[in-house]
Length: 288
Image (cartoon, rainbow, N blue to C red; front, side):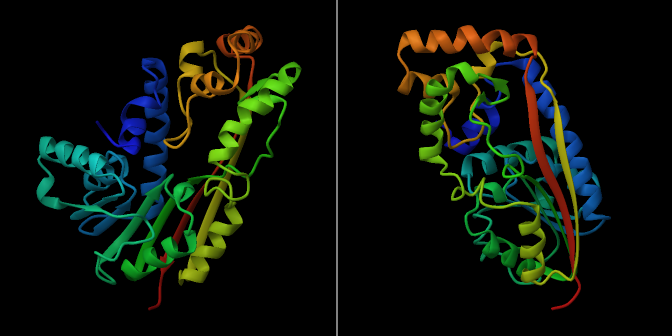
């Protein structure tokens, strides 16, 4: 069996919905391209991709001419998958695979890499200060950092909504469902919720990056129609249960039926409002 990181990244986040898979892969391809654009020219350089997953950013860097890429992740299963892909592509001789969290990159020598990239990783890291310090430590003078992170704290939680859908008449049931998630991810304490875009700039400066840029994007838009099965069976991240699992835990069959009766038409007809924010940060270590 795969660990929870690999299981979520490769399977659970799609819930068997091919349309959702294709939509997501298209969106993250755009993120990859912009993140690598922000990293600058890569020809002949050594790049460290922190939290590489199955290699989205790392393989993109190799395609852009990086001479050597270090794939780093907490999940050995995802590193194994990345190695498998690298072997299929015939680029494994330009790759190194390292099992390590973002805040503990001690296996990499100081000033050993030219570029550090990371995508949607700091949201899982409690000690973000230490992670930025590690990014700066492993970078050579003049080295570049390129980061993409969701900013989950940007929009306040609307307790009358179930994800993107108005469910105010179900507020007592929503509170019980939400309590399942808040036990796992306490507001203001969980790494996904304890920072915003200003913190990213501050942490980069404090870690020793002399030039720092950040672009924030926030979108409020209508949801697209989606299958009910996909909606209730897709966990938002590797640490939390699906909505179906959470409802099974705290609601009676009759209460689950009430939720489905109200929310399912909104999901399937695309009558919700999505609120998402994210930030691209790129920086240069000019001294040290």
